[in-house]
Image 1 (tube, rainbow, N blue to C red):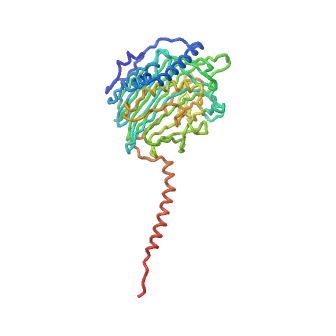
Image 2 (image 1 turned 180 degrees about the vertical axis):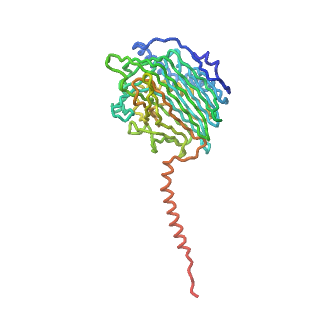
Length: 449
């Protein structure tokens, strides 16, 4: 599948903006029979993967494949593909500049109709030399009915109460376009840009509260993911850009059902790895998706701290553009920190299967020289978050959030800084009292003459 593309791997090269386009050939249109076959195939693949994990030989082959990564980590930037035994291939983008590294993965297959899931990871160091890896994975595309009117989906699948009506699984695409990574100088700042765009996608909407029950077959005009990375004064910024084309749905047995008045959300899974303690903060408070009792918390930003130092930040709240006919409408995107219990249970097995592909090929020892292994399991992520588009109606959306890594940071998270103030005041008071007592004890005695 990637034999042609591999001839265009770029290393230390400056090229004109161009797109490598590959036709996959029109695959079977979505139907319930294909859906059933896909589910059976995924189940078989999951079982096979489990057996491979139990088998010494199977584990060895998977680990060997990961350790023999074709990525040249000494290169400033490059593209290429990583073959896999069970699931097809991964298209990667690599950047190594200004004491930080970026790794971007996209999963594809021309044999198994793989879902569209992307991973974006960054490795960097704090001022004291502590290493940090932060990964973001687009795990799921969801459709919700904002009955509460707060712009975000309220969902708790443990209690059975949910505004998320469907989640989307992509079946296949007619073609895709690769935008190879380029280095472009703007105002003496190096920008690294790359992207991936899928054309003519079919898939399925599954009922969120039922196991593998198809609600509708869908066609998506396109799905585009592009990125702009740059560093200014030890602040490394990544600007992802999401372009989601028009979505049309044919509901099964529901002639009156449609996407009108429904909203769209993108569920992201974060993975943080460091030899030191890492904590997640939303709205200035410590947060953990696995333990929170609030299924959805509206947020404007989220931060990751290593010990007490601010290392990474997600900046939310930007506007998004919605194309309605010939008009472009602008709305504010909403964002939420999401509890683990808010992820549709039927999607979990699907996510475990696909995210395992990335895990097996994310060898942080080979890539960054760190010891350990990244865990992309949504059930263990301390920060699941959703980017939400309350006004959608199945129409095209374009949106650019912002991710920031603080290289060589020694800045304390405000929460910790505030917590230290009372302690310092108490300490100052104690020292003052102690000094007074010492002075009293040492007060000279005047003798009479």
